[in-house]
Length: 236
Image (cartoon, rainbow, N blue to C red; front, side, top):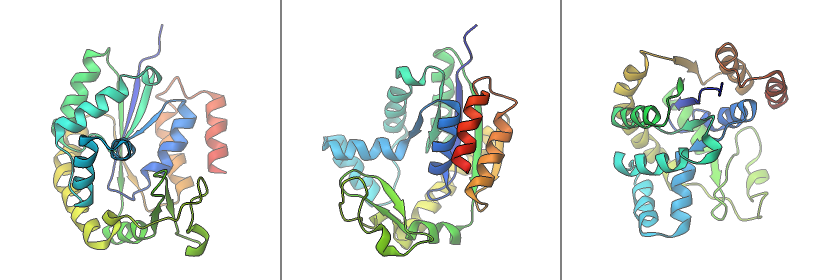
């Protein structure tokens, strides 16, 4: 019998470590990580009318309309590589988006949903995001945390000069956090009825990975011994 689709949802504000944990779990479970931030940046780089609209919204620290996000995410998770599941980083962000996702999954054959809510203080987030840099050419994001800034001035992929994103400035960060907290308060209540787990994102990445795997091990038939070895390498 075919394994049920597994959908893992990461809740948490920008800078809470969802990207790092997504890469680790995606490798361990052999399912794709879908970052809505990356989907939006791809659209912006494509230079379409929608991309220009998205760029203006992101620069102001606002969020896209539910209908825009729903359409973009539904198109992505309908792809063949999501047949057995995926990790969603940045979606849903509202109850309306969560309801859309539930309906879409039900109509597509169902799925087992696990939600991890990454919790971190405002001061910690401002410090983390203030040390984040992005390549304007390939869009990859890097952190200068824990090392001299000079070591992260150019992108290792294409040698472009890294820049500080406009929406990573303190005022924009606070605005994004206010929007996030306003929208996701009801969302966390929505998911607490099923498969919801609070994660302290202030802990070390290795500790958090172990905590996530501890939740997923008894739940997932996809998390084989070979997959766990890959996850262990990611930690070590």
